[in-house]
Image 1 (cartoon, rainbow, N blue to C red):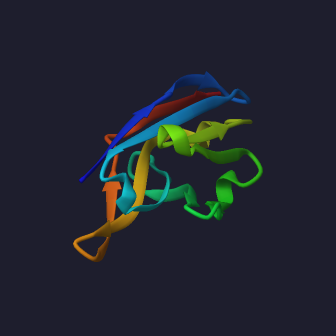
Image 2 (cartoon, one colour):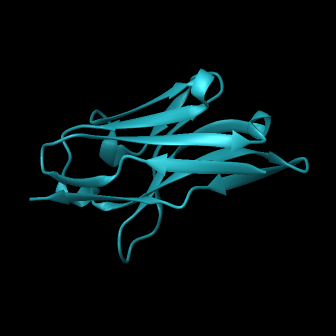
Length: 119
């Protein structure tokens, strides 16, 4: 089993920055990639960014050029640096760990952290 602990959400004005952190514990050898999704009220959960074990990143179109995902392998932690934030970035941000469980692909999710961007 994998546990994910998120931190770093909060309230920020438009144009500001925030950094989210997600630390994995437990069966971390099962993880192939980590990243972030977000869900705004009434909307579907959408990709923000992922980073796999060989350093390949994948960003959602709406955050390209503004958000950067990175990791600290020694701390089993992935970071999301969010710059030039917009009100439409307001959402609950969920950390995801993609990996294998019992030989099958499996996703673990964090509890979510609220990001609110005021105009």
